[in-house]
Each structure stands twice: as structure tokens, then as C-alpha cells.
Length: 399
Image (cartoon, rainbow, N blue to C red; front, top):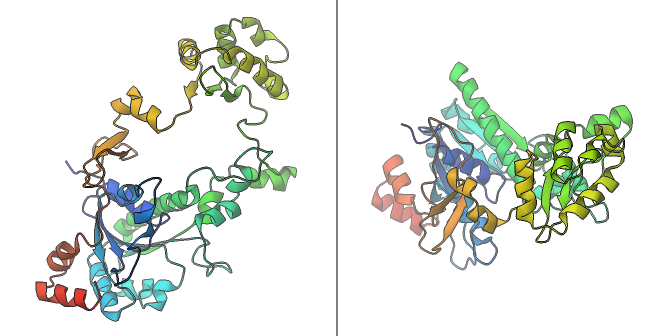
């Protein structure tokens, strides 16, 4: 059985941070051979390679996740010899992934026209802030700016606060996910025609794709959506509610589900009360209904409320943090988390491979590796360079 659905495909990963490398992680998770290229460390360099190698809270724990399952080599793409080596790699590969500022590869003589001349089936995956075309294309574009332009920053947070970050690099990750989706679409096209193409994934457009009906709400109704905090306006009850030991979420906005919630609360009459009997009525009286439910949940333990919700078929749940995930039997049963061996970190646990495929489930084989860990395996075994060739290239700063 193949380990992953993408087994047999090779992707060359250029670039750094999240917007490109998360796409590489997704494809490596599902069996693609991903060769990550980083610039060789020069004498006097404080940091090395992808900045993600230094990121993390307390310890540099981000790269073990985003670099997992990847082979890592060093290569100086600003050197003509390094550019020639990349061309040789590309001739033997299916995908080239990059998230440099648009025009950078072309400046190095590594644009799609050049690389596809030797490999017409090449699929080049390009992730950037604003896309490869348009007046903003040359601008530097970080995920935060794409999130603002795409609309999610204006909607995140509470109305009483400035626009908020959602707590994760969601713009970068969305752009990388759309890039991966586009790559698989392009692969299907190649199966039919033999032709490669360019996948152009912009951060602001990946965020925009998530914006539901915000644009037609304005063009058709003149309505501009704003921050609403923990509620969905007009949809009630669906909120975070306090308990004696922390907030929980309850979603009971459907008529039948609200009736079950009222029963669980010992207040079955609420389901027939004109203020709450219909979806529209509950939305109009959302604030007072939330206050009523909060008064009921507040003195109780969260576990007791959640048990009642489960017994009455009302969607509800704890607001999880990492310790909750590690203790949860559902996470364990579905192997949602995986522990990996690592020379520095004794308790390295991370999210597993998603989505789950029944025949080719994918697997996390190893965490992110040290820079250049696979130099000999790639340059010698794949490209046929000798030990002397490799040592000379190292000495000259090419690899």
C-alpha cells in the first residue's frame, strides 16, 4: 500500500516562512518527495536558513512541524552554478514551489518559461501577497497585510477593540492550502494533456475566498459587515457561555435543538415563548436569551453542563487549548496528534496528517531536519555528483 496519495511525485521547495512551506508540508504529508532548498550558511551568519528554524514560544518548535517529511538541502540560487543545479533538479521533478517576491526567479534566470523549456510538464506553484500580476504584484506582502486586504482582519475580534489577529497565521496558511489545491488541479490537467502550468496563489485572494457573502451583502443591500465578537448576529442561541470553571460553547439555534436545550435547562416553556419560539424571534431577542442561558450555566461545572447537552442532543463543547487536546479521548482514538523522536525535544507532539484517506492515509515520518541534512543524498544519488564535486561546491559557497 502506498504511504500517501502523492507517492512518486517530487516537489522542489524554495522560499521560506509559512505561505509557501505549508503547501510543501501538506504535499509531503501525503507522500510527495519534497526537497527543501535553503541558502548555505555563510561565515558570520547569526541565523541560518528558513527563519522558521528560529520561531516558536519558549523553544524553536515551529520548524519541526512545517519542515516535517521534507528532505533539506542547501543551494545558493544567486550563483550561476547554483542556478544550473536547480535546473537539473527541476528536470527530474513534478513541482517547483516558491514564495519569493514576484520577479525574483526571473531575475535569477529561473522563470517558468526557462524551466519549462526542459520540463514541459512542470507545475510551478507561486505564492505571494498580491499575486503575480496587477499593480500591487511587486510589493512586499506579508500574511497580515493580505488578511487586512482580504477582509478577515476587519471581522476578527470584538466590536469594542481594534481589528484583531485570529491568533494564527491564517492568511499564509490559506494561501498555501489554495496553492496545494491548485497544484493537484494542475496535476489532473497534466494527466490529460501532458502540459504543466503556473499556479498563482495570492494571500489576499485566499482570504477573500473565505469572505462568504460579505461583498454581495454590500452591492445588493448596502450592508457592510463588522466585528460581532463571539456571536453570529440574528442566530441564537449560539455563543460562549460562562460556567464555574470556564466558558463553553453551545449552539442551539435550530427550533428543535432549542427545544431540547430548554428541556435540559428545566425550562421547556421557553420553546413556546413568543420571544424565543422561532429563529427570527430568537435573533431579535438574542441579547436577553444569551443572558438567560448564561445565568443558568454560570453556577454549574462545565462538565455537568456538557453532559446535559450531550444527553439532550444539543451541540456543545469545551474551548480547547493544547492540554485539552492531549487529554481528549477522541483525539487519541483518531490519532489526531502524533509524537515524534527528535534529538533536541523529548516530548515533540504535533498535529497528524489531514484529511484522512482510507487507502493512502499519509504519515509524519520525521520532523523538520537540520539544514543540508540531505545534501549528499540529493546531489550524489539524484544528480550524480561525486564527493569531490560536492566538496568543491561547499568550499565555494554554492551548496
